[in-house]
Length: 603
Image (cartoon, rainbow, N blue to C red; front, side, top):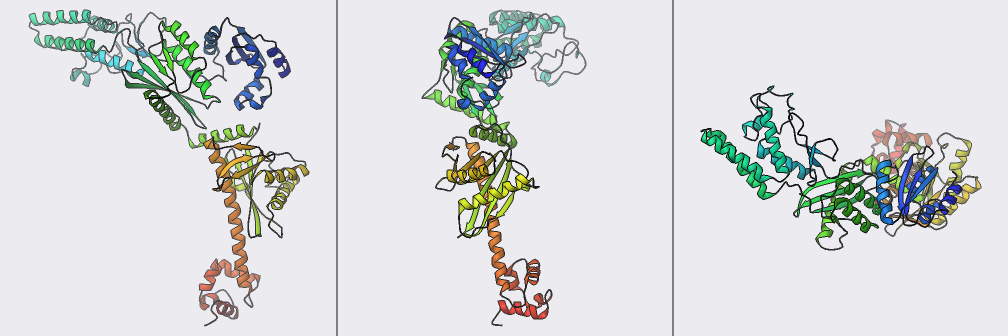
């Protein structure tokens, strides 16, 4: 379908709540969204794209068709949206790489040697699942506590494969394991111990305690005192476990705190898990940068908590969710109890969210390379300028001293990195200082070479950055127009501290970059490099002119002998410091004496 056909179809939609599915030319669903009023929301995609983000513009270009599903209510639309996102995993929705949520503890008693394992989700496979207890740390703590209490194996050996292959490990000698890897231990006794583990996970501490106490008394009567003492210690451990209530069928985290951060290259969604006020675990997901942090947090929170089926009383958010009340209702229907969503504005809640955001930032920056930061900044710059293509930028600056030695520099940046082999320097042929005239001359010369296909000038830039304001940009645009060229031009405006403040068009529209630190830094580096390249050329010309004029005053020293002196001594200062004998080594005696007398007239 054409864009006009898509717009007409969107305008024919009803003012009803529902879900829309955007598809590409292959029929693949690339985006799923919900709307209070389908007509208003969907038609926005096919109106003027000036207000769209770069990501949205890219998505709209790929839309070949769309479908809608009308819902009875906004809540029903939310439920349907979550279900469709999970089914289609559309590339333009913000997605978790997995939806593991809180982990569960799994035991399959049908196996000959059942084992406790930590899994991401419940499956219909006949095994017993317990939890969720909180994050991975909490669940692993549950496993370790039960394992040590019942002296179950904690090594990597697999039974029955590894039975009798090695001697008992250190856990056995530390009395943390009953040495189940030895052939003398029966599978029946192992299964009985695992059955006790299941009872503990179900909260049946008393039943397990009675069984162990009966075995302890029996061992004592039969004068197996060492075994009786071991059972006594295990009984005490179970009593302690029941008092701490670390593992029950209804164990849950009390509070989750969500954090979000994004740089120019990476974003991170983090969740801190608190139990009884103590921070016990953290989950996080690294993502690509997003257009709207609010929409991203809303989408990620839905995916994360619908996957975990509860296990939390309160969720603190860094940004408010537009449909937070609806999602609370959805969680209540899914989990059978209320889970509160809150965006704290003051007090401890704000500090907890700040900590979660800090954790998200640390994780994002830890996995971001210097190259990724640069590419992220360059991508942001492209979006800010609203350009379809941006790879090669040429930047120009004029340098002079009191109207003399007027020069210009042209630096080249490709994908944000300087391409020094393509730098160019221009000596401006003007009698008086005229920045606008100088820039006009430089642009005319540079693109005359381009039009002639001259080597070194034959690559067309995607944008020109000019050191100066809107007037400078206008001068360059008019010069390009005279040559039938159309290239985007932006002025680099400085503040009163001589730092790059903004980019500006010839029409005076300022594109603020201070709100995007990475772009601010990138444009600043481009301007500083261009200024450096210009001023060093200006200084070189002045130095050369001053050196040449001093030697030109000496009788008998023409261009050839002047060049010979400068090549040998490198500077006029060193020629002045040279002795008559040193000068005679490279010049005839009369010429050498003339040079020496010029710099030492009193001798």
